Length: 303
Length: 291
Image (cartoon, rainbow over all chains, first blue to last red; front, side):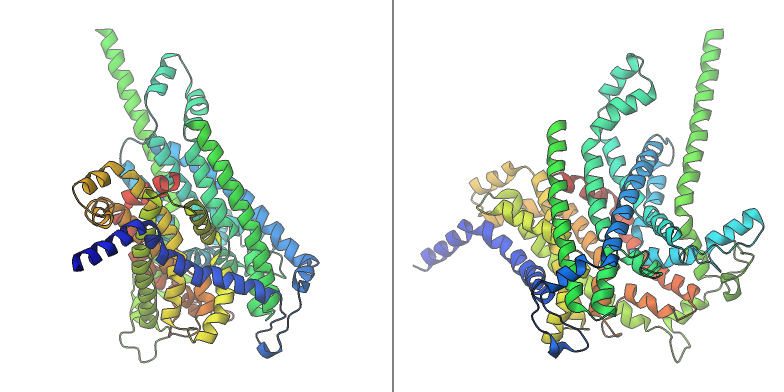
């Protein structure tokens, strides 16, 4: 009798094990991500101000309409797109070159590989503070180096002038994330089969031709996954920008997430801030789904 | 005979060229590594050197004031509540990592081994949850936690980090489990194991490297996290290192040396973990991503 109960219990567990094993993950993700996001949508329909929480009322989609008319929203969106576009491509190109170079090193390759990973150990916050300091106009390393080589003091206001601060942000971002590209692409290069290269060498293909027609197509999936992960992370760019320029001066280097934070927390327009965060999350969902479709397509082409 | 000599010369030339190439790559990689050296040097410089102009590239002597100050030896008032931040950072990172890898391993196994209705939709949902930036979740969590009394608490922060880490550990673990042949499972079950037993006795031990990799990813993500912490924490009761770095900035001046010292402390666990698990790290990044 007892035995059959136990067996019954065991059968129930075995039959539903797939679901039971996922359940805890679903509960936590629902409670701490899905519910807050739904709540966030509700907040975005109110005029909640953190200074006067009791005065919050339901105002429908007014926040969203106001956002569409806000020039700073559009500017921060533009800045994010420019930042993403430049960073992903430069990181990829640099990463590809570095991976190729390191791949052909015959001595001390593992040391080189470890050294190149150093920036990956830095928190984005740390990178932000350090590069803020490197690009400081008074005591920064960059201006100091310029002085060292040219012999005259020129206080270039890296973080204060508008296009210059985007450049400084890009420098920090590229330094921080190129190693990630290198590591993934290097893993791709290591996994390549030797035969096509031998055959090509017999046929007299130049190194460039080998690279262009064998290496590049074969590491395609690695390229793709690296670029997908980087684009997703770049779309969330916040730490670096918040610390290095905080979106300033006068909102010129604002990105979507720094502006969201400013609206919600600094300017106390919590309803407006959540509206903006909601718009951005929807945009990034569309982007994610598009990227994953492309990923699936590129995978089919290779296998 | 002369032929073999030219051959030998060309072989030597080739080797020389390769060594030359190696050195050039070392130099390029060193340029990438320089900021790390600079930060470590700055943390040990005498104070006058830090803001010197013209710049002093190599420190004239090494001092450890900034570290002594940080760890608080002989200081009645410490400028930065270092031990509070250390405790908070460790608590939030370790607790969230522990829970996230336990739950993520279970769900990762399920996604890798079973086919069931809604599996694909659930999986995509998890991935979308991962693509939501911390700051977007932190805004509603700020209000919710304020009502639940979890604002500015280590537990609240750990909860948020756990939720943030679960989708990624699930993703990585299902990649690692898919690498293990399902035949092993089936063989164990023919021998009389239940599904749970075949999971704990066969798959789990084989997936240990993957488990280590996921754990380290989760730990480092929490250890370095800034967006959520900057909204949900206010005081030394729950502030972590990344938020605590702001303590070194005043309105017009920044204590760069102190900040570099704390940066070095923050880097230590990251460096140790990355060095210990380099191979799994790369495998996790690439293979986990493919499946």
